[in-house]
Length: 464
Ligand SMILES: Nc1nc2c(ncn2[C@@H]2O[C@H](COP(=O)(O)OP(=O)(O)O)[C@@H](O)[C@H]2O)c(=O)[nH]1
Ligand SMILES: [Mg+2]
Image 1 (tube, protein in one colour):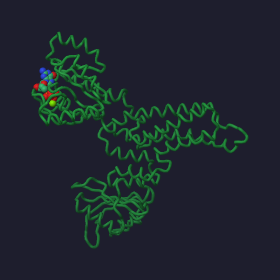
Image 2: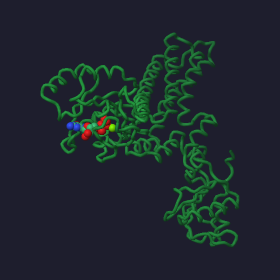
Image 3: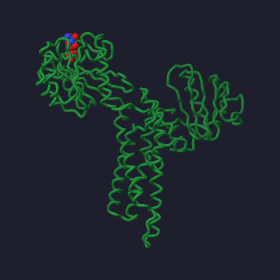
Image 4: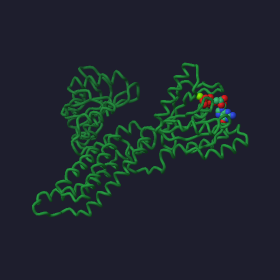
């Protein structure tokens, strides 16, 4: 890819709108727009100024626009930028893009503006990734975590770790120059202490990923249970609308229905399933049951619903033993309104043998059940976030970061192991270097593979 040319792209969403923004970045950004703007010489205008006028190309008037100028390096990308705010009409936007291309610009690739910002040192790699996360965020928690990362909070924590390690790496490598004299510049006791601190901080970042992942991607909750347990009724109650068809005919829900609900900032993606029964002559229902098993395995949380009146504790315990899932399980005993006192007592006694949280619910009368549904939502929330989220805490939301931290942790273990065996500096040094490398991979302080950069920025929208 050529980084010296000038790129152009529409930065706003496609379709009709009040205003659309077309962005150019590169050495010729301002000269190119200048050729389309006869009113004044834009190249002579100061940075950070706005200019109204008619844009025209080869005697054809295109639109009345406002041009924003960013001269020199004082721009998002760290190179000259011109932004054309035109009327949000598809034809106008295309004509402007074509005129810019005719004057020497080329169409930008997805994320290329941000990639240039990274290459020009305006953002580090973790910050650049946060830009995409911010655009994709659909809850407040996701937005806050992305903003914290964009503002450099996460990078600062990593730089702090890295600086401490660089200091020791330098001392240890100095020892190599004096190897005949058998000196130790780096205080080993302090170094052991540092490594153990670094391990602790890395562990806490690694542990934050489970939360970070659900903040960013939400968590899937599969509603499982026998037909007629009330699964679709539960989905409707959570959504507060009649989304799924409810009937007392077993096998009513055949396909899976997915709807997301925001609980305290985390997106829970509920999946209403066909439910489980071993004998169904209906081919479509059989397919639904197969899908139910797939959802059971992949979901983050299983909401196992049982009809408290019709089902027995022993059968439920047996069914739960056979559930194959990597997710967490919550058990809901529904239709509590139908329970006779004797059955209620029996459930109360025997629910202790169920190794998961158990909740009684009656979905018959929704308005009487606000408290019970709240309790269920609380319980769901607690499965993914056991403490309140601190707004400025560093939370790992990115699988690439998680992987680098994991490798960094492994090299910390090797260093620690080497120290315990009193290895000399020259033998410790490669592990320290490796550790620094993985840390640097996250923020892009070390050279990053072209393909990896391509993957990161390829996920961006065009024009960002
Ligand atoms: N009495 C009572 N009936 C319920 C309750 N929840 C659901 N039902 C009824 O049980 C039947 C089956 O419900 P549905 O949600 O379709 O079950 P699904 O097959 O698990 O999706 C419907 O007639 C519901 O109205 C409840 O808490 N109490
Ligand atoms: Mg159903």
